[in-house]
Length: 143
Image 1 (tube, rainbow, N blue to C red):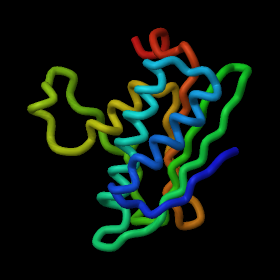
Image 2 (cartoon, rainbow, N blue to C red):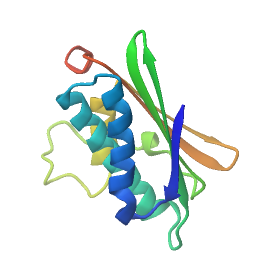
Image 3 (spheres, rainbow, N blue to C red):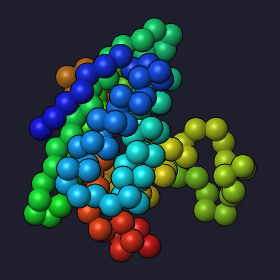
Image 4 (cartoon, rainbow, N blue to C red):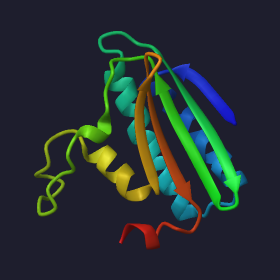
């Protein structure tokens, strides 16, 4: 397992996305899957950077693990900020447009739609949000 621990500051976003994409590329994920991983990583990291330690700042650890059978990448985003389960919030109503949606909640909604698994737990004083992407399953698992 690979990990990156850095300050949860928006200015560090490129380091996190480079870490995630570099890891996923080694496993042969295609451009569409890499884009989906990047989008979800950005959403999760920016949310942690914006809200987890408010009004202060803190650290975030991103772990990356992969499997070849089936071809999968699993990412965990771990922070010691305010306990918050983003999966507890209901999904936006289907008939509402993005412009009508309330601020917040769309990032985790997109993450749940684009990833094959998303889970949250609060353990040992830490928020742990884990996402899993299976190679070449993007089409079939989300219709």
